[in-house]
Amino acid sequence: MSKIDVITIKGTSTYCFNLDKSVGAGGKNLFGDVMLIQGFLRYIEAFDHGKVDGESVPAAPDLTGLLDHKTLEAIRVYQQFWSFRLLKADGIIHPGSYNNRNIKEVFHPLMTITYLHIHAKNAARHYGDPNYLTGMMSLMPRLRTSIHMSALAGIRFIPKRLPHV
Image (tube, rainbow, N blue to C red):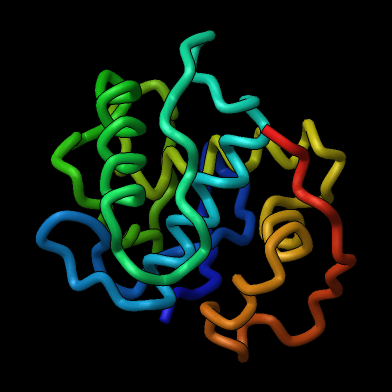
């Protein structure tokens, strides 16, 4: 089951989504983790209007929690496009290990999950959401079922409609 974690970038700590196990080709592909990656890709796609650097990309996968061809292809395309910013572009997304870490430079290669966090954070600013966690779960309420519930205590969600892409 995916979880809410704390990430520190350039000395500033914020909440983030994180995986429990790996997602993608050869990953553990737990239902909640797959759904979280599908949610990240949908949230970012809506922000980028279905384009990456002006080029159309495959539609983000539906929130099914199942690793299907559409999800594998979306992971592959995301990693391929951002490969110069990622540690690996191997079709798999690993959980981040953020305890006692300060990511000092975001322009050095990062894990895919960390780069998804950065993109979702930018999308939240665009949407006017206070943060991407509440933004994603407001746009996609099914995500709440895939996040460890103790981490959600006290977080308020206002349902929103996902912009058409």
